[in-house]
Length: 105
Image 1 (tube, rainbow, N blue to C red):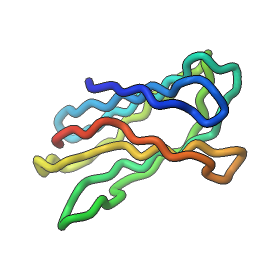
Image 2: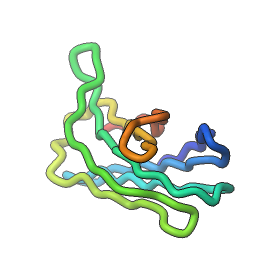
Image 3: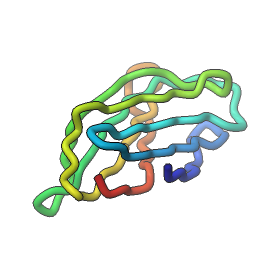
Image 4: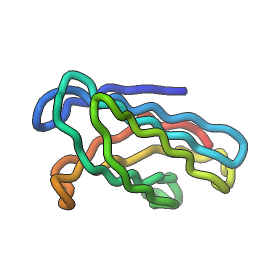
């Protein structure tokens, strides 16, 4: 599992972790140092033909007391750069985009 921390526009830090297993990519999103909760959209992306392509999407919310854990299943292993693109929403408009580290999946 690879994790990175990113500043959140309204304060606090988002910690995004991404991992790979056969057929599955896991994404964990934690909110730290902030008492606000956010809706989010996670796009799982793969780098193909010189650009990032979204291959699956999930929606949810995150708060300091309720981290988000999502599994993207049936994701073919193509030995390609893969990342999570997280759109932080307020309430249903994306106000900030943060990215996970890249993994090979």
